[in-house]
Length: 112
Length: 120
Image 1 (spheres, helix red, strand yellow):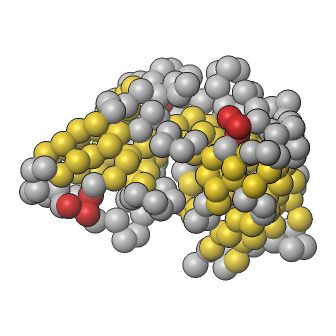
Image 2 (cartoon, rainbow over the protein chains, first blue to last red):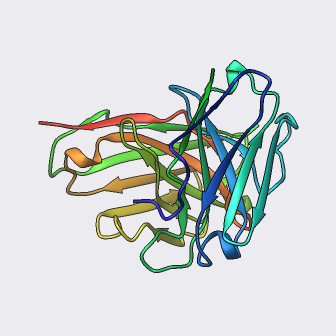
């Protein structure tokens, strides 16, 4: 089971905004950079956000990331049908029970 | 543009060893600065990090799989490999190889993934 907790699903109408939370602890989010990944159906995950709030080249500024304490948030504005996907957060973890790298439980985004 | 491609059997019998290879193109494993990782996804489930290797051969594994996992690297072929022993049906999953940044830990390049089914 993952040590990073995300809501199972979020939804909104086209053009609206959604936020996805990722809750962890001091052994992971609290002391490490957070990344976010988008996984479209049937495809490999794709890096959306790295180092908490940076976007790789080619990722539109509709996607944003932030971190506060032991939680992180992914925001998507101007929601499009093509944004329907599963989203995962990820970060290093220093606890002995978890892997050095842990992913969130995943959130399915539905465009109504 | 870095590309990763997984290869290996799509069907493995229970109790046998799952073996996969990831071939990297467009960049050198030996260039440093990155961990080369294996990640899997059970059908309909989330992502599970399996382990990583650095070009020097240093490895780190998920504690839950550590006793069964071996990751190795062949810098001459620009490849790294995964071996998972004593597999059961619970190891049926899509297996991805990915490049991870050492500092941020983010995975910026992924293979397309390969489905491995454990069944007799």
